[in-house]
Image (cartoon, rainbow, N blue to C red; front, side, top):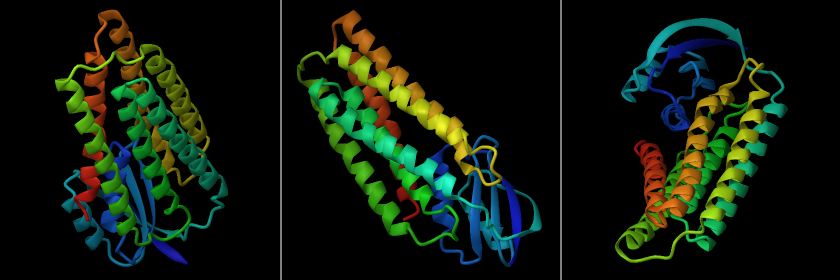
Length: 264
């Protein structure tokens, strides 16, 4: 079967949050067969049937600066995608595992920085889970699943934020800076492993997973932020560095959830 492959430049598409917005926006277009995201180059390839104008209009409504480049005929996507699915499953499991580890150790170590970082890991896992549904198939209706994921992510961030406010206004014990730094160091290693696994797919023609170069760099910055906060807790003998990094990460998690929910 022959399809049209249309290429778009999307300058403001620089993380999986924008990728999810686009997937949700285009999921009800029956003529769309496959989406190939390249967040590193900020480009999107759409394999579709029929006219391109409705897709152009839908992307423009997202206000991400989308610009149609060209379109040409291609064979329907039929390459073996088992490896791509395995890689996505691997990074999904790693992120879910570290969500549990950081959440548990965050409470045990009295560290809001670790708790907030665990929610960031959960948000990453949700993105990889939704991406798995798009591998090797036409877009399917997943609005309700995205809604549940967005509300869950937002609810957890809200509960953590309430605890954060409580700790700002009430005296709290110092976080265990050793646990903060140790667990964050392992999370940093986990993100590095995810990056390595995802880079293995970069030679494939359909490689929206190479977006993780940007995505994982954000996670690495957060991990380094928690490690730095742990060292400052020790140096200043104060819980404030942990509370501040916790607030920053929770803001990023909540912002991502709200952007997904805007389309529901």
